[in-house]
Image (cartoon, rainbow, N blue to C red; front, side):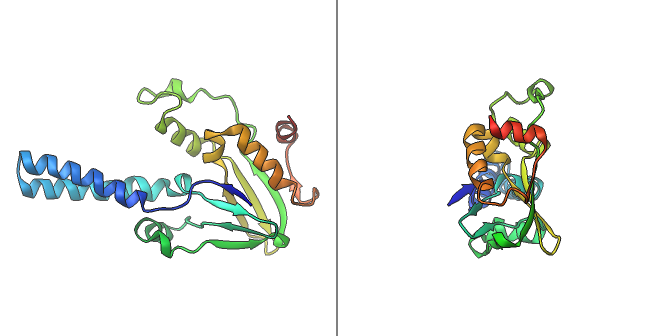
Length: 195
């Protein structure tokens, strides 16, 4: 079984609660308890809505592939993202039968050589924000077209940013499971996968 991305967990909830608790305590103990509650609540809402709700599909994009099916987390809709943040165990993964796939496209490879770190003052190359911005600005995705002509994007960005050569190897194994007529790749992408 091939696995890509990161599974959804309680991390967004716990991290948001921890940051809001620390900020609330700092203001509550030093200034006033009511201000501490307000600052803590504001920080919690900002972390959940301002950060995790927006970038959750980039951070938690787990999917896996076995011989006959692909299982993935569909968190594109905001309602499903809220469920993923507060009750991740209730979120069921969707299943695609491999015989329902009529076309496979690879988006975002090869990546152009952009020096993202030169545009950023607050982040160094290799840091968390650098990787997050790279995943958002230059996503690597597999687009599956199903028989009902719907498209499903499976994200490879997290794996590709952290371990590019290992991800390319796993991607080759994934693509080898399909009929070559189904796979639509550009010449540059074919050259990258062949190297």
